[in-house]
Amino acid sequence: MKNRREFLKTAAFAVAGGLVLPNLLSSCSGGASSVKKHIGLQLYSLRDDINDIGIKKVLETVAKMGYVNLETAGYSKGKIYDTDPAEFKKMVDDLGMRVTSAHLGRGISDNPDEDMQWWNVAVEAHQTAGMKYMIMPFSPLSGEGATIDNVKRYGEYFSKIGLITAAANIKFGYHNHAFEFENKIDDVPVYDLLVENTSPDHVLFQNDVYWTQKGGYDPVKYLKKYPKRIQVLHIKDETAIGASGTIDFKTIFETAYANGIKDWYVEVERYDKPSADEAKKIAGKLKLEKITDSIADVQKSYNFLAAAEYVQ
Image 1: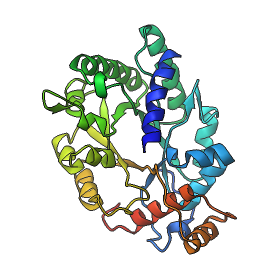
Image 2: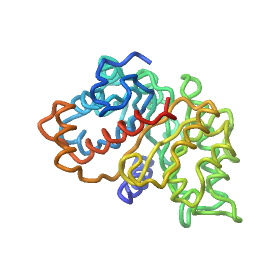
Image 3: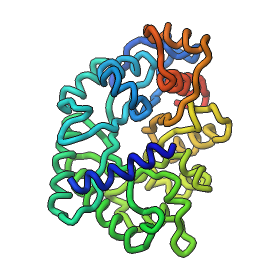
Image 4: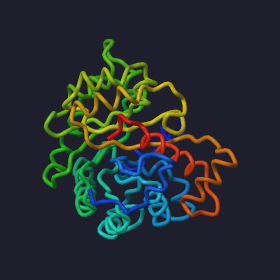
């Protein structure tokens, strides 16, 4: 998953410089319960497909898969996936889904006024799209950047952004990778220091359970440690959800629901090649001539979670 981490790091500083009921498509659940569950998807999971066939066709495919709750990763200059926010919302709504969250961000530049103006424009776009959350998925708090001064600086920055989003009834949050746990200051993980140095009223945390575990910590323990600050989750595995057998999704979901968490999003960053039979079956259900490895693993992730009794 190095590609995403490098992409986010580059994007951070490049930019700094500059439930409606779903359609009755339950046949796509791969033998799982016909009752739709509140299963979300981070569209970054299908980034190459979006580039190849366009956002509209990808959204149509995601709706057929069974997902109902979407998180975007394609904002620029007031548009979402190069689409007017109102138009994007309508596309999603018309397919029986909801777009509720977005990954986007701008690092701290030498011009604080420009930084806040960038966020003002972004907030207006995401309010129009009907978002509940705006999540920043990167920061320079790794390696030599993991200093207490940087933590405090970004903690203050995040809190200011949270004030702007709150005025539009949108919650601002931060999404972790492994480095927030691997990097420590006086033996305290950067993740904990960010929690301590951000406003509890204006900054939430979207815990990525895979990266938390990769960073050497138990995501369940963090859910219990910060039940009010961790309000959204990324459900992730090595490839498709459930593929590795190394993540205790049952306990994660049980703890999340006990904490009152309602929104979570599958994210698939790396893919396995499906067998010929799997590919044919998924292509048939989605009414596609052929499928990509990414579409296969995103569908398999839905099937796994739709069949899990502990998922609501």
